[in-house]
Image (tube, rainbow, N blue to C red):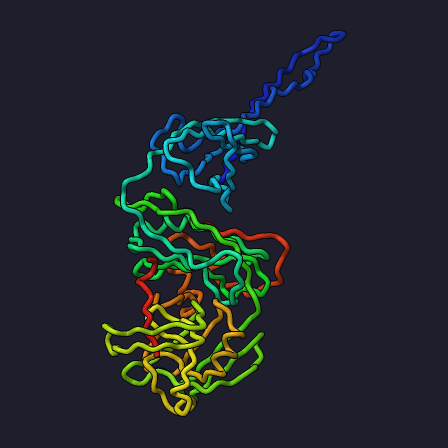
Length: 424
C-alpha cells in the first residue's frame, strides 16, 4: 500500500508596532513567533475489522496506514499464545505462517510510526469460522521437501477440480516462493486451471535453495469450494544436466554444465503413436515399473520396464528397451516413449535428476500445455501472460541473469488429470 503524507500549512501572523522616539516616528517589527506546528499521528485501520466473526482460516492481518509505516505487528490467539506471521513482500499484509484454527478468537495489535516519531497503535479482535462443509479443492504440491532437483524444476501446484479463471488471483496470492540466493520469478496458469507453475526467466542457478508454501487451507475458492491444506517444502537445486533428443538423427545428447558427456541412440514413437516435440522436465524416476495400457487407445499391452523416467502425464518416458536395440539410432518403433539400451538407461539414471530439462525436436506432434510440467515450453513473455496477478514491469522484461546478491527474494504469491501408466 502506498503511504500518503499530509502537509500541514501553518499560518504565521506578524504584527508591526509603531514607536514614538524624540518627536520622530519610525516603525520597528516585533520579533516573529511562529505558531507551533502540530504533527499528526499516523492514521491506521485494520482488517479483519474489530469483532468480526466467521473469518476464513486463511485470514491475513491487513493494515491501511496514512502518514507513516508499520513498525510492529503482534498476533495472539485466545490463550495469549503468539501466532507467528510474516509480511508480504510488498508489505500489504501480515500472513500467519500456519492456518488459523476454526472457531477461535485472535487479537492483532499493529503499530504505525510517522516520520516525526509519533506512533499509532490499533487492535482488532476477530473470530474464525467453523470448519467449512463446502467441498474441498484437492491440491498437490509437486515440490517435495529435502530433495535435490535439476535446474529446470518448476514449482508446480495441481488442482482437482481445476480453478476457475475468476478464482485464480485469490489462489495465487496464497502461493509463496522464496529463493536464496534471490532469483525472482512468476506464476503462470495452464489454461484449463488444472496446474500453475512458478519459474524464473532463466534456469535456476545450481546451489539455489527454494522454499515453497501453498497456504490454501480454509481459503474460499469461488462460491462453492474451499482450499484443502497448507503445504510447505524446502529443497535445493543441484548440478545442471540437460538432454537433447533429435528425431532426425535418432540421437540423444547428454550435457552436463553445457558440455557434451555422451551420445545415446534412441528409438522414438512410430507414426501412429508419435513422441511429442517440445521442452519437457523429468517428473519421476523408477528403477522398475509396469506399463499397463489395457483400455487405452493404441494400447492393450502390459510390460515391465527398468530405469524409466517420466516426461508427461500422458505416459511418455525415457526407459531401457532391450527389445528395440537394433532399431535405436535407425527407426522409430515405440508407443511414444524414448527407447534406449539397458546399459545406457542404467547409466542415465545415475546422471539425471527430477527437474532436468529434456528437449525433443523434429517429431510429428507438439507437446500440449499441461501435459507434464510444461513451464519451459513457451517464451518468458508468453509465460508471464498466464499470471492471474500483475507481474512487475522489470520482471516482465526478463532481465539477463546477474551475479547472485546475498539477500533473499520472495514472491507472492489429484492434481492434474491422473498420470497415465502407458509407455513403450
